[in-house]
Image (tube, rainbow, N blue to C red; front, side):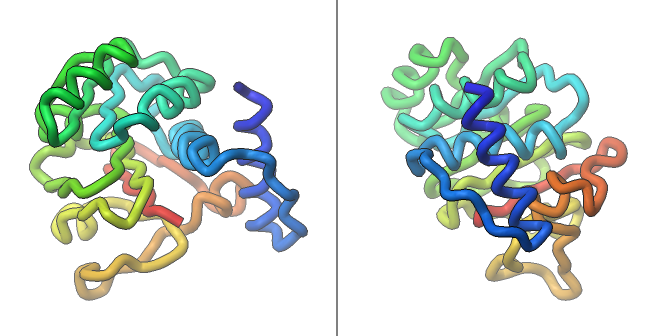
Length: 188
């Protein structure tokens, strides 16, 4: 497990330093899950106790496995729009079915699919990793959070700016988490 996470981190560092990016041998699902884990390493709270998986579906076991390379959350909350699917995913990963608001009220939140994350659901210190562009982030949340990524999202509030890319953080060119701010990592 750790070897492919190191591969992802090395590629991010090479990208930030404008060096040739090594060819990755990873499946797309591994790249997504690994990026979320590397984000948690650099942008998450020091000892995350809770992990929310929102809309991750069949990717959830891989995301959890990658997250556990760096942290061991004690509580796992799973949201899926379809209750039967939520129960299946929660059973597969050993978590509990939760509402979207409960899944977003965790130390680490990994989101995918057609969901909307609202500001009032997210507490200080949370890292929200967005895996795809189908996830909608409340503009009020974008305005309140430290947002990392490569591209400014559509619908961003006036004056919005990105702090840095995950690549720059992994390479040590910019600091990651400072205190208990809310951090959002946008998809590539």
